[in-house]
Length: 189
Ligand SMILES: CC(C)(COP(=O)(O)OP(=O)(O)OC[C@H]1O[C@@H](n2cnc3c(N)ncnc32)[C@H](O)[C@@H]1OP(=O)(O)O)[C@@H](O)C(=O)NCCC(=O)NCCS
Image (cartoon, rainbow, N blue to C red; front, side, top):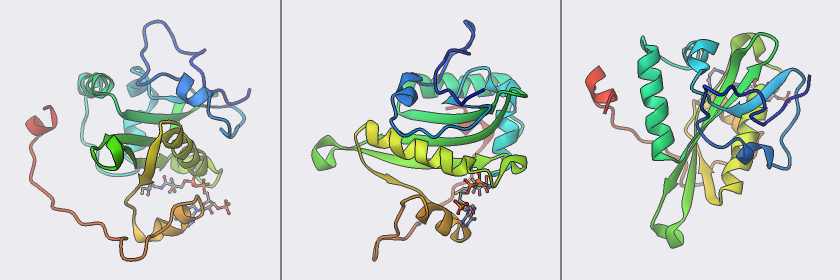
């Protein structure tokens, strides 16, 4: 079976985070056998999406209600594009990456993309699925008219992202953070 980027397989009772035609119209979407590149769906809690994110960082014990609550808030807000790779042979979510589109006033009310939360199931690494996800997000941000796409990453992954077209800009390659204490109640806002 070939990779599809459409919602032909979506059931009536499941919703997609964003319109899948945004992926199907991408000109250079790579093809992988038995894998489906598609938007996050409301049913992906039961397909291992949270466990997959657990291979990226601490996720916490998220219930299905919490997942759905966040899913619908993202959908209503707009600007969130969580792209998934599903292995159709097990119905499991095996890769994910997120594009967040920031609305700006600068540059004539431009749009800026941020690449977030790239992760591939450890059993599937080295098969170019990371590359597939990042290039999909890159093409998607371009097609949405973002003027640039940025990311933060660990030092050891700079080579991975540079191989996919990202560049460190001289004098402008710093990432600074302030970390705040939060409670579970905050995350429900
Ligand atoms: C980083 C990650 C997404 C890569 O996924 P993957 O599917 O194994 O990567 P790919 O198979 O697409 O690799 C694409 C290319 O990048 C290279 N590459 C992969 N990881 C690399 C790394 N850490 N540093 C440099 N190059 C790397 C591969 O060798 C491959 O090169 P090739 O095209 O010459 O064969 C995956 O290892 C992962 O999920 N890691 C844990 C979560 C994480 O750290 N995410 C990134 C957060 S910023």
